Length: 164
Image (cartoon, rainbow, N blue to C red; front, side, top):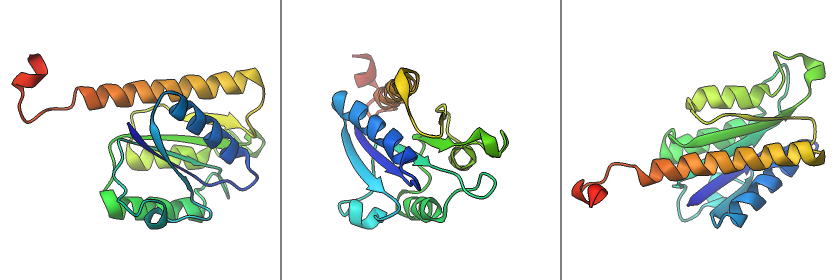
C-alpha cells in the first residue's frame, strides 16, 4: 500500500509520533512518502503525483486547539491535488493543561474536515514509555488493517472476479 505521512511539529513531539508510525508502516511492508509540512510542499515531496492509498496526517495545536498554518497549507494543496481523500487517518499531540476542549484540537478539526471514519490518535505532550509506544503501534496496525480491507473490497469493473 502507498501511504502519504505528513506532519507538522513545533517542539518535535508530533515528529516523534510520526517517526514511530513511519517505522511501523515500513515494518509492515508499506511504501511511505514522508512529508514534514513545516519545510516541504506536497508538490516537491510528490513530483510524480499525490495519489496514495492512505493519507496519515499529524499535527500539534495552536491557539485554543487550532490547526497550525503549515498544516492548513498542506491540506489545501492536498485537496487541490487529489480532492478530499476518503482514506485519511489523523493523529495529534497536545497538552491537557490548556483545557480538554483544546487538547489535540488540530487532530479533531482535521478529522472533522475530512469526515474520516478512522479513530484519532491523541498523545499527551511527547510519546514516552511503553504505554505510548503500544498505543501508537496498535493505532497504526488498526488503520493499516482497515485501509487494506477497504482496498481489497473496493468495487471492481469486472465483478465476477470478486467472486471467482
